[in-house]
Image 1 (cartoon, one colour):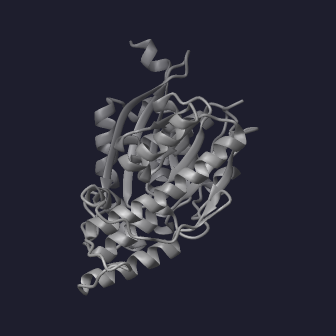
Image 2: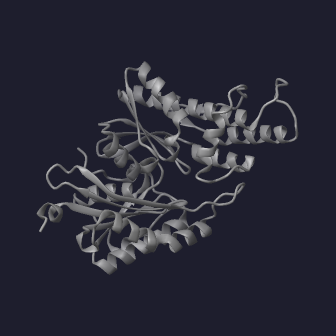
Image 3: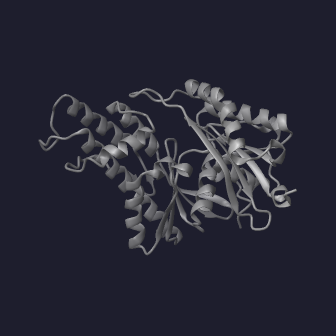
Length: 355
């Protein structure tokens, strides 16, 4: 019998807070506590161009694909249900209907296999997975996704929010502009905005720049970008009489919103005295954001840490990892308390596993 395999702690994580259904399995070494990714399976609900993903349709997708994704995760990991220590699921934040669908499925697995449940904060999952993959010790965290924009630093067993979006998240701004342009949502609207932006740059259109301390606002930028898109579609010209394309609009939008993110992140770094930046969340995959953040960090003698799409984009393995960290401290979620919530702030979580 493989005693090493028997002694290691293993968790299955279920993520479904938005349009990605992810199930991952992770193992923690019993001596070093080092994580090993055993499987990381994901299936995405893609809506038609020009549309977003509605909660009811997304929830239906998660229900339809949960069993096959779970089976694939177990098969890829080579793990039997009896070897699992706990079942982890995203408690929030996120979209209510998709969260509920996956929470019900996670409860079902816990009851079926006789395992403990662990509810996980989605953002803390991103942070802990980012730290594990990159090796960043104590960075300022920029969490950028379709639903959240936060600048975070760790202090006294909490992930403290130093700045955040005052209205819509940066990822939501990019996704909604993709709808305005009616470009494809496959593989992701933000990714397709990024590819178009690489073809732009001949014209930098003036968009509102809204930073207030360490907070920022994206709704006014989106409104102005939408107005310029309407002008472009009508064959009009820019404010200075210049012609511009979809690519120029995407370039201008990215440059503006990413400059805002760099500014608030640098301000947080100066405040806490850190020279490390960890970028997490789906928008963190964007190469231009990483480039701009890297230039700022280099000027401060620091460095930027980021992961690829396997771990930046919502996934089950981050929920498994953060859940197992909490489980190892004795935390568990009772079945009657295994709710989910659309609002669950990062700084509400007591991070008992860190000093």
